[in-house]
Image (cartoon, rainbow, N blue to C red; front, side, top):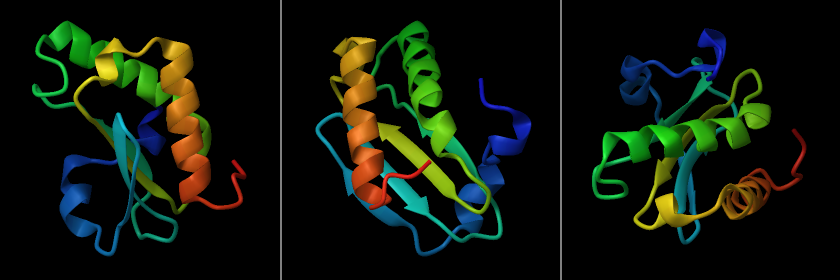
Length: 109
């Protein structure tokens, strides 16, 4: 679980403007490096995982991978796509880390 200081509140989704986007086969991310609000969020729809158990499992796994990437002033929203639930954690971690490195260019945490 992300600490409260690293979470993006629901109201924050509407306040953020100018998000950049990047995508891979199983994930899509929206991000910005300098924002008045900072934090991260994971969105898993019923289309990506039918059962709530699977949605929560996927959210926990994604949060574990994205936690080191949440630095002050950065907004990071990860959207899971169809098929993401079938990935083993090692593949999920590799794909999401590669996407984050590509998006933030330098790959520094």
